[in-house]
Length: 437
Image 1: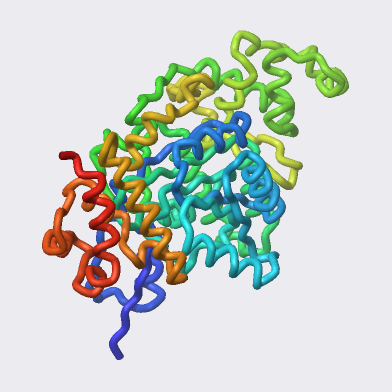
Image 2: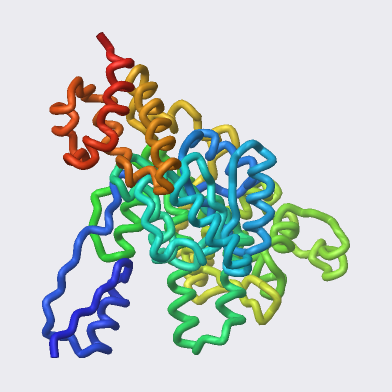
């Protein structure tokens, strides 16, 4: 009996598992590239995440996009807050009334300039080609989940952006979800490995696209020119001594405490907890006071990504040393850390973002917006999504090529005889009214 197995985002290990379980060892394997070159990747350290999100969205006025949150409550709160900031946003999660959820989904498909704030319940089967951005306020559970969710942007091939803010709290929460879940131990082991792989992508100082594609078994030369680490290269610093101090603080305090308390010990914070446990009298107390607490947070995130420490949720989130830490203690392994960007550098310039987003400027950009407004008017009157009238790629061609007749309109990709008859004259009138000559 003929059989075929199809998958969109399986890494090499998962593909091998599928082949083995379905007995397809002799079958032909067909794969295509995972690369989405039109998508710009940006991952930032969490610091006032709502304000960071607002700065990101300020470069996407008039666009449709998705903001993913981990919990239903956060979806509702974020949507309410965005509306209060003048950004039209609708919530979407599985706990909503079905009619309202469907209504919000329909609005997202049919309207422009709308931000849908959602849990992962949104996305499967949704094919809106002109989603211009996807933002994550919480860390997904794996590279596969991140790739799927960000992959809902830019399906029309036009420039689109994906952005994520994350911190140590994300890692702790995700680890807890895995550890407290009902899955078998082997499944949990795989889920931890997948989370570690995503954390490594977050902490890389190299090209993010290269790191993402490597996870799926695809080689990339790096220097893609369309991710934050390529556009603004990240500095690194030799941190072997800092790593030894960080690991020693975990060890000397008995591997019983989370990152917050261990950092208090390192920087020499005298408080009720450090005094109660006698940590103020340890040689390691204050050993890292020359380094800011925020930098120590980054150090522990990166030590986690390197597999030198782990989080033990059975011990209430205590940091534990992994066996690989021994080589660092013995100075047999050199450690380099990614240097977190100063807050001023983390603020993406609106002008830079707008250029990457549309690729149009000046008179072409003005015409494109006029064409979008006409498309929206027609779509609303027909009760259909705007891209059903014409996709963005066609409107961009109108704006740049400036067809001057019905015949020339028909030569634009996306314009057939039927659409020419229905919409051609309206768009041609706008184009001629914006004629450069």
